[in-house]
Image (cartoon, rainbow, N blue to C red):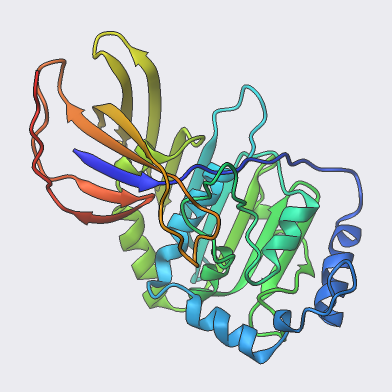
Length: 327
């Protein structure tokens, strides 16, 4: 049994237009350099020392938490029609330099999403109907990449730029810069991290190998997750049947494919919406949450009995809660 507790997410539209990349970035850069917002209100927190300290304090303790942030962000994205929503995570080396790259076949950034990417405390994940995104409400989710990289290249639609943490307000100020051509995948939003330390490279490698296919049970849009480590690839796919008559309800099939084999697991899904939640200053306006329980099964009458993880979108712990099944 796998348990998840989380909230729904607000969805928005996105796209690209034919303005030059530099023109796209100019208003964002001017806002940061002048410490003014678009309506002229001073936003000293945006450039102040307390704000920078707050960001440093809030960055996740685990350096590689950004991997799960990227998966969450990919699930928040908007995708073109007839496209299988897909995220590819790659770890490799070039000229003895460790690199990490994510490629997502989403439609691309809007200006508002770019603006949010450069701010502290302004997440693009909004509340809707009393629910909010599973993680990232603090507006610092993307900034977690700076735990392992000083230089981060970004490409999405017509945008191409980089962040350099070593510069003044470098985690917020986008620098117009062509994305490395050897790593560019057309039609994808990409992040390329120049890793700081060999220890970060080793930790990312370990965490990529530790990704659990069950994470696909509790996301809404992403249907395929590819993980590549030194060219060795694992592909996770998910397929949902909202009305599986053979099992009397909703089921999810997850496959895990390597060069050697493909493993498949079926889950029976039960959902419960919990309402009138107590207020929480970290999740303002959130009043409801959805609890999802997934039972791994071999067939209609044979469960797979073993300890399973608990998720709050992110995996938390293997709890092994006992469950009594009644006819």
